[in-house]
Image (cartoon, rainbow, N blue to C red; front, top):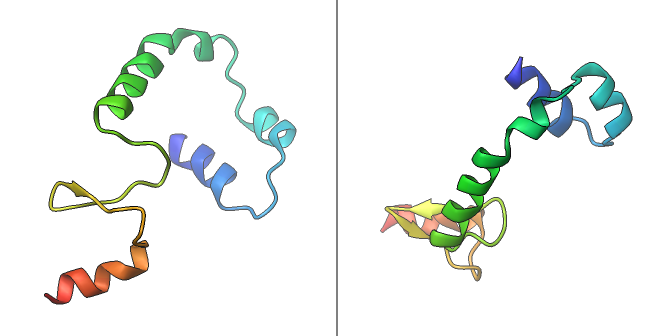
Length: 77
């Protein structure tokens, strides 16, 4: 169900939250995620992740000056 929800949100070009929310109602589950959200926030701060997607190559964050398309040049060396 998680994969269906993610595909339903990320695959369409046009995002409509009302339609999405009606297909995947959360009820009170959202309010039970505070600890997980806080842990993810701390992890992002500690890992210096400031935006998504953030790419890592051999354990190092790909600098802002490069795009994912530039990986081909790193992999050739």
